[in-house]
Image 1 (cartoon, rainbow, N blue to C red):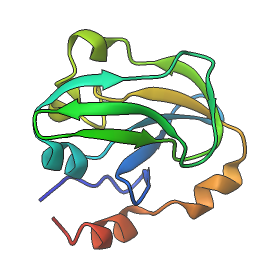
Image 2: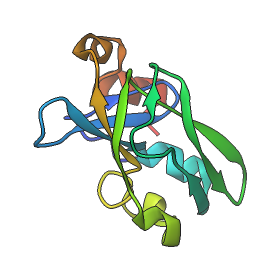
Image 3: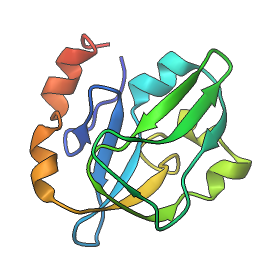
Amino acid sequence: MSEIPKDLFYTPEHEYLKETDEDGVYQVGVTDYAQGELGDVVYVELPAQGASFERMQPFGTIEAVKAVSDLYCPATGQVIEINKDLGNDPELVNSDPYGKGWMIKLKVADKADLKSLLDAAEYAALVGGK
């Protein structure tokens, strides 16, 4: 069974938002379920720091042995940091998706976007408790 932390927000496309200590700033990554479905991650393409995205606009791609998938921005906002460690160590997405495997830090433009995301129970129901 995949790990689904209760304190995160989720998209139906398997990205998560995790609050940081900075007001309005969230870490974005893919869920434990998503990394398990993808298999071994071999490459992550991330946007430039300072790039802005609309809610659910693709912000990058994740490449695994099985497939290449788009990464979708869970909320409208600006990228204030990217996880440079993924350039040399993309398998962090597999080994620690909610920790060292985060992808971007997003300054959310409108917290109302968070209301459209799933909570842990809704996400667990979406993935069928897998």
